[in-house]
Image (cartoon, rainbow over all chains, first blue to last red; front, side, top):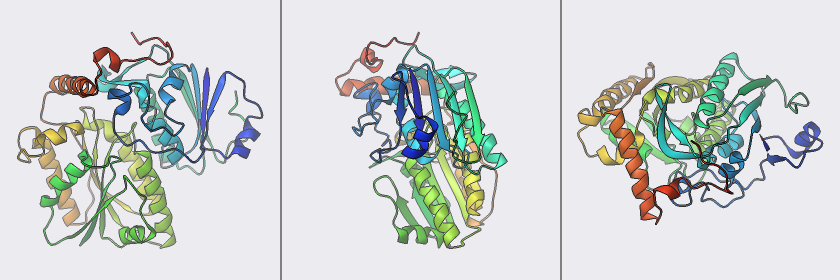
Length: 165
Length: 218
């Protein structure tokens, strides 16, 4: 399964993806998302599922079925825009609370056997320093989520093409 | 000097960022006028944003969320950038206390870069950051003497941060882990999760629950 997470307007997204196949799940901003409140309920009360029932509580399960994820986000200070970062923050049910050591530092242990490749398309006015931060950020995030391969691309404006393959 | 302390934790009630701000306050000169802000429940008002821009220094404390800044704080920082540009407010000194749940303080390094980039966008001065690992340890150690035992590194770092704020100067980010063995922190953390789950009627196997018959990691 493929997941596309984006912060584009509906019109911008449809211009980019005129059709989406049944094997693809699209996560977009419906205005209802709540921010993670740090309750850890997704680890110790309803393991694997976020406690906030706003339509974005199933990110852990969705990622467990993915072999490919695409993120299209405004680049904000070298990280994602607030909506995309919000969804990523709400995706920690995908991993376990337990720690493992990876390259000499602690990380959270994997919950699921699957692994997904990640492609990130950043857009907007981005400085060279922000680009370097963004690359390091995605690389580190891939370690957190135990991703496979990852690629990062930068676009000066909202991408109109070249992100659909 | 007017110092605005912004608790950037998303948690309502007691949180590690709040504990760290409380522990930090005695380090700075008593003459400072301190205003406290939280953003966990409601976004800041227009008046509060203007009050932040009217301060001499800002001190943010927040937990690391997926390598960077929690999304609600990121929203607040983008809004503050807009206000700063509208009000043509530049040169504000900004300081940070970041904690993460892992052991190594160095895991806050990318967040520091993001903050430096934010300061550059706003025209603010990146003052200094104290970046602590094992932030979840704070409730257990907050009553211990600062600068001793597990808080030895944190005490030294907070002293440096306080000197920087008192003098409105800039310095390098300080990355620290607690003075406590890493294997113990790992062991205690795992015990904590099992006990917390047990209070909710769950056992060790329940913590590893899989959705929709998916396969467990090896």
